[in-house]
Length: 213
Ligand code: AP5
Ligand code: MG
Ligand code: ZN
Figure 1 (cartoon, rainbow, N blue to C red):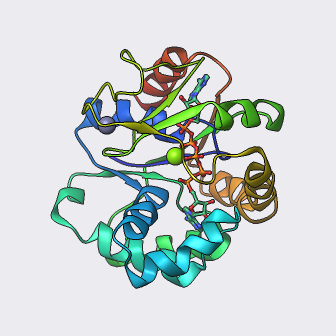
Figure 2 (tube, protein in one colour; figure 1 turned 90 degrees about the horizontal axis):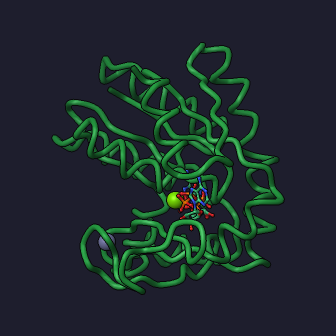
Figure 3 (tube, protein in one colour; figure 1 turned 45 degrees about the horizontal axis):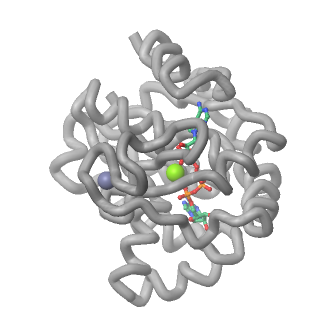
C-alpha cells in the first residue's frame, strides 16, 4: 500500500503514521524527520536546510526531490510506504508522479487530516517529540506514559526548534500558499480522502483505518 498523509503542520500526520506502520508493516517517509537527522549529522544538506526550517519556510524542491528519490529506492519500500510531509509543492507532486511512473507503482490513497488554523498553534506549542525515533506526543492532548520518555523506544522527549508560536505562522503561510494547491491536484487524481483531524487521536486512527479498508 502506497499512502500519503496530507495536512497542515501539526495536523497529526506523524502521530497517525505510527499506527499505519504497525498495521501495514510499511515504513514512514517523513521528509521533516530526514532533514532533522541530516541537521543532527551536520551534513552539507542538513546545514543548508536548517536555515529554511528554522524560519518555517519550505526547503528547496531540488533537495527534497533528491531525498525522496533515494529513499523510495531503498528495499524496505518494496511493499509500500507512508509519505508524511511530502509532497508540499506542485513541483514535488509532479516529480513524485514521474518517479512512481518510472518505478511502475501507483499511489493508493492520499489521506488529508483536516484541522483549522486556530487549533494548530496549541498543538505545536504543546508538542514533545522523541529525539531518537521522532514519535510525537502532546503535554495535554496526547501525553507520553512516562514524563519526557518516549512510549515506543524510551528515547528522551524534546521540543523541536521550529515549534514556537512565531515559526508556526510562517509554516501555516507556507502551507496555505504552496501546499494547499495539492488538494485539487489529488482530487483530480481521485485519491483524496478527507478526515476530521480535530477528533481524538484514537478516533482519527479509527476513521483512517476504515477509509483504507
Ligand atoms: P515537518 O517535520 O513535516 O513538519 P510539519 O509539516 O510542520 O508538520 P508537523 O510535523 O509539525 O505536524 P504533524 O502533522 O506531523 O503533526 P504531529 O503528528 O506531530 O517539516 C518541518 C520543516 O521541514 C518544514 O517547515 C520545512 O522547512 C521542511 N520540510 C519538510 N518536508 C518538506 C517538503 N516536502 N518540502 C519542503 N520543505 C520541507 O502532531 C502535532 C501535535 O498535535 C503533537 O503534539 C500531537 O501529539 C498532537 N496531536 C496529534 N493528533 C492529535 C489529535 N487528534 N488531537 C489532539 N492533539 C493531537
Ligand atoms: Mg510531523
Ligand atoms: Zn522514540
